Amino acid sequence: MRLLPGFLDGDAQRALLARIRALLAEAPLYSPVMPRSGKPLSVRMSNCGPLGWLSEIGGYRYSGTHPLTGAPWPAIPAPVLDLWSRATGVAYPPEACLINYYGPDARLGLHRDEDEDAKGAPILSISLGDTALFRMGGPTRKSPTRSVHLTSGDCVVLEGPSRDWFHGVDRILPGTSRLLPEGGRFNLTLRRVTQP
Ligand code: MD6
Ligand code: FE
Image (tube, rainbow, N blue to C red; front, top):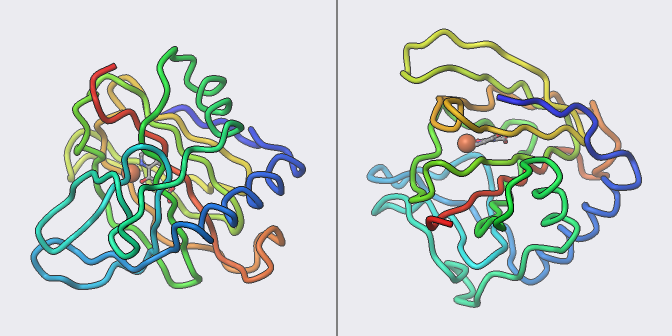
């Protein structure tokens, strides 16, 4: 993985947060459920972009519309597309921007991002708000892992071999950022879905 510490300065973080709030007014956060068990995830989600990533009782899939409102996802804001170009260096745009919100007790189990056809495209993640303890593993679930703190304004690019490696969020460190008055953490995950 490539870690870009402090890729967004304070002003950029506040501007991006305002864009996220506006998106969420249109495409509200909801609680997705796990495939099969139907158990709710602790992370709340929404999306922007032509395609949004969904976790449903039937499995994971990409959809052009919000599962509760039925409306098309709002567009990815231009400043976010600009971050994608600067951080990844690729010429094609992302198609999916997953918006994750972590409250103080939310976590995200070890997983791979593997629902995209664009296997060779990088993935960009942008963190805002409270610090996350992010765990990066390797090609198998049993591969050794290393943990890093992701603080507000940090970006991570998964590219090359790490694109397909296991990773997750063990926990959020409450009270570590003052960006969100309500506390917690937003993470944007930008992906190319179809072959560019
Ligand atoms: C998170 N991130 O930081 C979860 N996936 O909240 C991810 O699952 C992730 O950071 C693919 C690429 C980068 C990531
Ligand atoms: Fe992921």
